[in-house]
Image 1 (tube, one colour):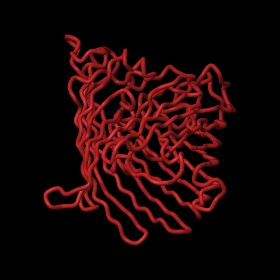
Image 2 (image 1 turned 180 degrees about the vertical axis):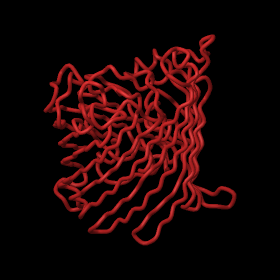
Image 3 (image 1 turned 90 degrees about the horizontal axis):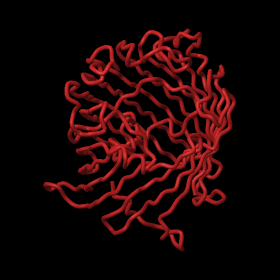
Image 4 (image 1 turned 180 degrees about the horizontal axis):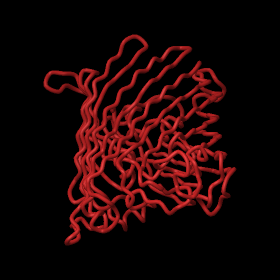
Length: 398
């Protein structure tokens, strides 16, 4: 919220706003896939160099700063423009109340949010890109991440009330291709409104908040242009999300409990007219709860339950594809993710701290339902449990 302008440290490293990050992994699913996710990998048991990231982040002045991320995707073998948030920030008063306030220019709805119970910064922080993914996802969960631009005005008032309102619009396919980003759900007809409010408490070593988010967007799904194709109309999506978080930070123990409930309604008039949806009115819900514990900033566990469900729509959630299809046309997917972490240099007096950050993680995801079914969900004999995934990773930041 301070615009990335906070400075500190000594020596030349304190004045160079560059960082680098990478993580590599091993992925194994309970049953091998019918075909590899990528041409460079096998059906199961894959080692991967998942990502290499470079960050330009810090303050340009006392009031202007930013966070710009470039990512090389080792699985897709491509470079793309990732999370970007450039800010103009001030500390002062608003109608007699103390406030941190400013403007955020960013490339994803929700990226400006300071809380880890929302999608861009929420758990899981890393996960396998080589397992089978569910067919559905809400608009807020990332459909516009990287292929939209927006401006938000925000304020944090009296260290309690956080308010953020903004407008977003999609970028042209040509510009997205230059940036290495994929084209999203279509072109926005007009700027899409985003609104966020939260109330925060701090006491002792504890912090908690409760909040809500609203996002609405209209798209021309069959066209890269901002004018609708004659006779096909448009698609519209509206997301309402509630979230909450509690955190205790002690010298020995750290606990976090957070969750969100995202309810999305959509009117897919254009997609239905084009033969891509069985019915125009649809709904999709994503509910997630995550518990995290760390001992001396070194040993950690994470437990996360996620439930995704919506109405039946055989054209929107089609079958006919081994592993990834839905035989009954429903998106329902339930998963439990368990993770154990070791951060060897997590303590303040650790070797190489704070210049080198290293994490080893063991993550296991169990599916009780996948794309609408438990057994033979794809119509080709695959069960939800066949997608249970073991994910081992090493993650480091300099």
